[in-house]
Image (tube, rainbow, N blue to C red):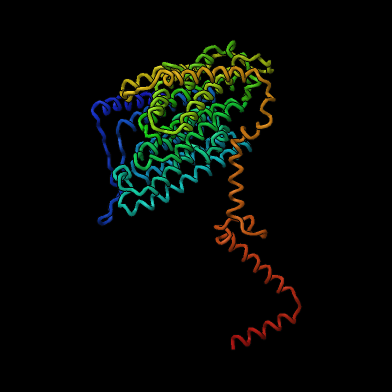
Length: 549
């Protein structure tokens, strides 16, 4: 019944998206909460074509994930009902953030996403899950700091409805909000939480990495877009560096879900870098197409893990195509869409971004990084395809191979349909390709050539011995030791001396824990003082006696 309601909501919002797009409508709904003299607290919702299409995509993907979870997580048990409520509250927090042009209500949805994502990451209640949930939650809390400071700052402008004041705000507020969005979108230097969040169940990973948690930061950047402040080469470089780093790390990783998570990080780097190139509409277009094929990729990987005795190591998989032809077909379609193979969803957005990047007057480093990352995407996709599908079967005992679970099949079939047709359909509807692009033939063919080079390199790397990358294996599989740098910064910035304060940071040392420390020290002194002989009592009596006189 819940799936039926979700489907109805999807068609409802998609119909209104088409209507608003054709007529160029934008509706603001204001709900007054209470009045106090001349001060009014109101709740504002915005509905335009951007919010409506994103709402419909989030609802469609979440409905497919919930349908998939009926087989994957079970139905009717206490834990599966708890899982369902967590997923629904997660989607509700995302919708709250999408529809809000007010920074206060955005913070409500933003914090809801962070809190529920923590509950979902620690769902399996293992030590690994708790550690991953802690990294995810605390890194996302860093973004909340920037939002809270921005909210306090905006009080001087008289309103938190940031969409009405974008041309008047100080550039410092934009930088705060951009860095806050970077924590949610896992850009460098906040990237280390994204592979760790793979401790969550696979349906959650599909939802988180396609259209909700990681795209919340990019969506906020698109909503806050102001051309003057976004013309910033530092943030463009950070986006490109994220794309480059995640592509390299994915080529060294052997965990199936982590490879797909790092490919998500690579695509987020592409969205952020295209945003800071000034291509706002194309960045949003890639956000929508990426949501479709990335959710499909995760759900197909979840079916493989489900049947391979809960194994996620791609070196132990192999010959899956013989046992699960339908799942592998959908897996390959989503992989090709990720690589940007022509006439699939990913091609329409990625090709336009690369060609318009060529039209910009940028330096050679940006040009090279874009094409290298394009080739590396194909490289790790082919490597993943070889290891999980084509490699020889390792004959794990107690493996169960059959495709009989009907809900999983329905969900991945619907997502496969949209992974093929959604990009072209949205291109025709949004008409964002009406741009006169003049490039020489070798530049037009360079993106296709980089795809073929990546395909060849990925197939060659697949045949190499696994000990090839031992010298830098730990560097690349630990996200360039990014999580370790945070402890180094903490150690240098927040520790003062080698005594008890070494374990406390400055806020706690001069706050409640420092106070309790000195109270404990004082009480120990009084206790030791009271245990001595009668001379001390007599002496103290005379001292206080003379003081009072």
